[in-house]
Length: 243
Image (cartoon, rainbow, N blue to C red; front, top):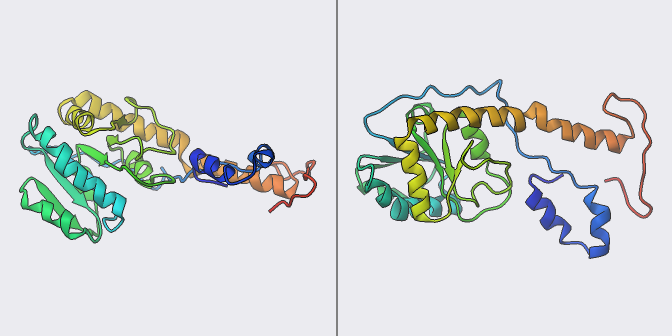
């Protein structure tokens, strides 16, 4: 099982071409998922100062580099149109370069917080400015569960089923990223639509009760039973093992 289709592709590429077709049927994509029944959408709290939130462990270099890029390249473009926009960076162990961003009074670097709820409630935009990384970004699943409107780079959303303009906004370079964030800060209807659509999307596609059906099918196949527990024909390719 792999977390994303991209991971599946890279894994298959490790094998000889004549093996890939056979192995492709044996590798199942099972994305990271969440529990909508346990996580409710946050109640958005309006503020006079529009707030852009980044939430993630800051000792992971791609997160730190993404925050630095956003603060240095994107935020000045946002401030040209929304001068009072505030950038809040929440996450454990920010490196000195990230901490130094707080010399700007419109940037708040909190470090670790025990309860992120007040920051989630105040967020008018949730940003994922990643340019490196692999696998799948759990923070997108979390943000959808919280009902937050997201702006991400394509790399940040890699490995996920998203609908650009419907449940997320994707932007590659600094100017496009700034335009997307400004839209969330200045277009209330778009902001609300992404909040609702993101929550609906995670419930339909990334809830554990939906995703884990794939795991059930994998184990049913290995055990030679169908999903109701009844015996089913089991085919094993000669020269291969089930595990």
